[in-house]
Length: 139
Image 1 (cartoon, one colour):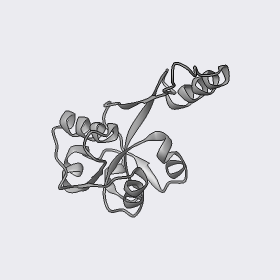
Image 2 (cartoon, rainbow, N blue to C red):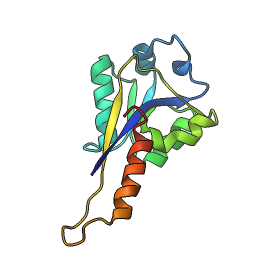
Image 3 (cartoon, rainbow, N blue to C red):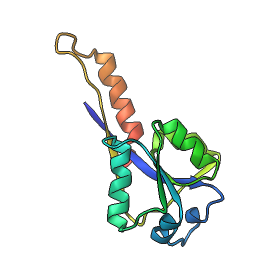
Image 4 (cartoon, rainbow, N blue to C red):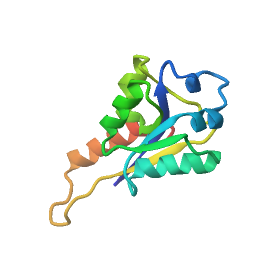
C-alpha cells in the first residue's frame, strides 16, 4: 500500500522568503538549507526543488533527523523541505510558514509493508485508507 504526502518548503515565520511576492530562488540562494542524508526521500525533494528552480543555497547542512532540521528552521537558522504531517502544528500556530514554490508540488510516498504469511487485517487496511486521505488532500 502507498500513500502520497505533500512536502513543503518551510521557513521561520519572520524569514522574508515566506512573504507574498518574495523572489524564492534568490532568497534560497541567500539562505542555509538543512537537509537529510543522501538517499533519503526528503533529501530527494530538496534536490528536486533546487534543480527545478535552478538555484543553490548559500550553504547546505546535513542533519540526520527531521526533528533536528525542524528545530533549526524554527530557530530561524535557515530553510528546509519537510513533510506536511511533520510541520502541521507549527504551520497552524504560525511558528513556521510554508513558502509558495510557484506551482512546483513536492511529494513523497509512504509505504506500508507486511509479511505474506501475516497479511494486513481489515482494520489495518481501513487505517491506511484514512491515513492516505489525510496525507493527500488533493486526491
